[in-house]
Figure 1 (cartoon, rainbow, N blue to C red):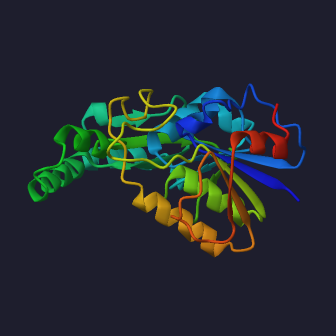
Figure 2 (spheres, rainbow, N blue to C red):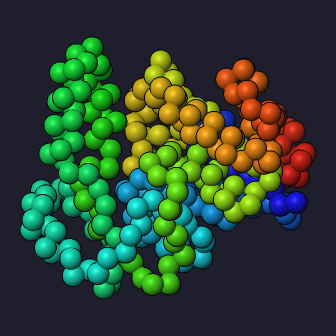
Length: 265
């Protein structure tokens, strides 16, 4: 039975670098998220945010590895000039990929609308940390224009939508028929602690001094997957059973147990 190893970017995964660790067991399919590609290859790379998608594309990683990108809808490149004239974005908010082709993907968030949302949030909730709010809501603001080719190894993610990259990867693995899914680097988060991510402070990630998130939405997404695929067994590495999830198809493993099962060296 093929096993799927889904690699989140929580700090509990720091010991597992895909370019340094070898999985000796042959029947393991790996899934990774966002900037993990900087450290090595995985069988499937999932990216949700527009900035990191463009970084991955410009690196050429997609030429020899399968990628799954959110909102990856291909348009004729002829629409770009008209869009920029209509939207009237400041130059700093326009991000174009390195090579120009006759097709493109356009995504992003209007800086003016985002600024209005920040203002509205601070008016409704005056006790919010303004600096932290601006950091989080300012992510991926602007328009990202990535010029693409027909033969790119990139699949548009049809479902789920608006999920975190890690939980999207779990769901995609299950869509591919996974019956054993191992979760590493899924540390959740807490607004009472600093952001928990291996790549914090790097390009397209939150700064090292940013606060974490309330993990409710992530937990709801995970619960949805566990319930939608009751015949799949999920093995959560580095987390102890705490009663948060009552589903019967979850088991908790140590790092050492994972290495033994998948023969990681």
